[in-house]
Image (cartoon, rainbow over all chains, first blue to last red; front, side, top):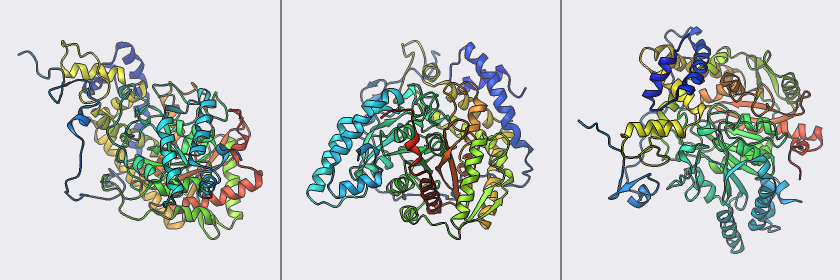
Length: 97
Length: 498
């Protein structure tokens, strides 16, 4: 069994997804099945083969550093769940102490 | 002729000749949508008012003899993953329900500049993860050949809209097959351009090293016209290729394969493939040979590892990309009642805002990238990606294009694979290699499977930036097959009445 229910719960916490117990029961065996299948990549003899992260071969692409029009504060904040004093209003990020 | 039955090329010619106005063309398609979309459910948002405004503006320009591009006045449906200013962009997800992007994707801008009329936004599997549109939070789209069958995915709303004559053209995105598979199962044409050939700026990211926007049409020429209009270098996308768009329209018009070397991929066929799919594919290959192509068999031994490599690479990139949906700056926010901190609100929002497949992939990606597993999973998948690219390089040393079936089976029943992820993933078996290699591929209809009377797609794959070869081969096959059938394949679709 490559992945346990506890590991799935841990990864969900790291991914900031508050999975219910019922979902964990459902997802954990599915993930186990998927990981067993994708582990086939380990059969491939790939010693010394460089990894590919993307296929274009482009590196360090820059565009000209020229000022162009951008969003106004109103446009940038328009879709925010909560706004205060021309800022994104968010729940507290630090604990009580 | 009925306006909704005309191809984009025919509409373009009729508009140019002033036999019809853009307003009439747009109204005809909006009427068609009103008549059939309650059954097809291709669209998530309609843009009737802005479409008619755009059409009126094109008609004015034409009246004033201003220069117009070939697609001016031709309607197009846009997958709901492209940012569209003034129109919702949900990606089929609850987490973006009601979100209105403050800017246009580069491709949205290009469509507008070309004068194409944006009819609305089409349904999709949530964040483009799926092969059926069943992962849309807003319910599945349906296949116009048989309303009980899937229209493919993730760009299934776009393929269904084109196949149901709701739009002559549509755009989608292809990450593992999300344009070619829906095109194949709906009996239309769909292209995954070379990665970097079409801009990703303003396309909500799923797997950034793979995501490729591309066109749908009912004919190869129509797909080429849209391909040309939407593609080309974009300084806003750092992975955009700074080179001219390959001459896809000219190639579609030439439709000549004489002397071309065509390789049949040994590994994409055989066991696990539907007999009717293999039969139509074999006939297509014989047909291309009869048209003067030189056909040979080519082995790509690492393609059998493409699917597992993809289901490590794509989820890994997705787990990173979808971290942006944090309930802080836009989109859904759940549980912000003053008692919870930001991380709790994030976790509750993502729990309620994401569907099951998105959660599966985020967790799978987090697993593949975690320390201790990275080398065995993500690292190994990246090496396999290199080997698949080398297989392609070797193959393209021998032949000009490769061919295979586009999908192992025809459209399956809605619900059949909905809670069986591995079965769903197999739908992309033939399309994934080109995504991993970043080269170009097309699906073109090649007939109906005997077992179920549903469409089969022929896939053609070409080296990066040789997209024109796809259109040359697909157009030649289309012309010969349509000649044999006596009508376009789609004329046989019976799922949606007139």
